[in-house]
Image (tube, rainbow, N blue to C red):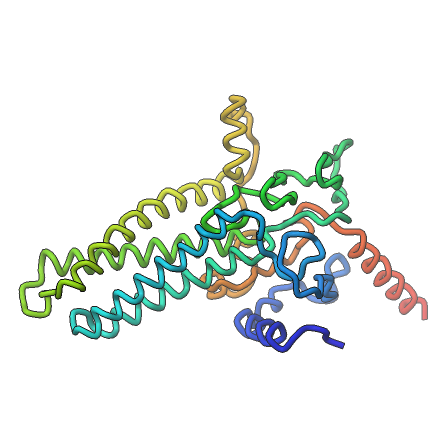
Length: 327
């Protein structure tokens, strides 16, 4: 019996519709080395937190991060409202206003997904993957569990996060392997929306000479404030996008990059670039631009660990397959 509430079931169905076709990229079922694990081992509690048994991932201990994350929503909603006011005064075409509102809404949705998505916290039951020439496996002294490669312990979230890039106070969450897609989309859509707004205002200031360009006193103040917001957002997201792209191309996140530079071992790095499928998933191309959870064909490889529960399910499945073949 599905114990989820109607809202959770509705959201799950909407995400399934958005990612229609993603499961078609899996190898055929005749491949003995691959299978699809459909078991849902997520917690059922309607609690907010970063513990393993919390049903909704949310950092509730960092008050400054909560305020900064809420500030992002206020600023974006303010920018949408300013565009609507200009459109109602016939200073902007309705199409331009709708286009900006769509991009800004996608930025808000990406921000929400980044904030409320588990960034890739390592489970307490995590076990190392089978690899060659590996004799020792690191452990987290705080979590008392296996610590995969590129994982780091976040003191704010109080969890080890796989491929942790950094803890972003504007997201009030860590940026890891599971929400890097959402974070990248947020940066991209915010960069695009800020650039659109600045372009519109510059065009109005330099090239518009009719009566539609004359703003009221209230509109002038709204545009001035929004121009400062968009300029700061555009510059900030530009630098962050370059950092994210550099991390994907080099395969080294921000924390590891700073460590290598501090120890002067950057030239010894042999890390490979991250496959885009490990960031945006292996679903249809249009899902890369939607704030939906990515689908990883090899989930254990991307996360860097397996769990005892999943391995037990795999053993049980193999036992049933052998029994069926003997019969």
